[in-house]
Amino acid sequence: MYNAMKKNLTQLIKTIVRLLPEGAPEFIYVSILRPQPLKALANTVLSAMIPETATVSDGSVIALNKKDAVVSGALMFGVYEKFETELIRKKLGPGMTVHRHRGEHRLLYGHSRQGRWSSRSRDCV
Image (cartoon, rainbow, N blue to C red):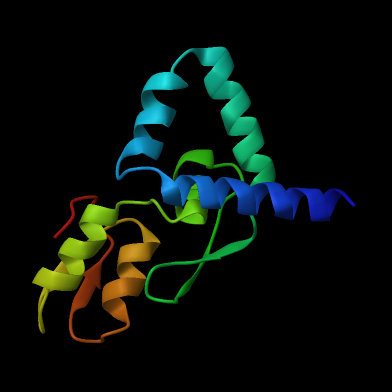
């Protein structure tokens, strides 16, 4: 019963998040949930909801970290770095080297097998 409730709650929140305007989930998390008690509660709830994996925008599956409510939560809800993802889709071409520390962008560009990835830097592109 707990798993069914968790799944239903997660699905409800995903639906609500998708209906919000662009940038609203980040604003809510950063601004409205800024007071430490609210942030701690939100992180606890998000961590409890995070599954083992999530399917990202191109259909790739990425492992999530239950201890990272911010990035894994954003990936779970499909709101992680939308602008950056679109930029990668539109601007990167064959033979380019991408420096990035997060897995979603690596999957997104790596599937095309046209560019190279370097994990030495936290800088994007």
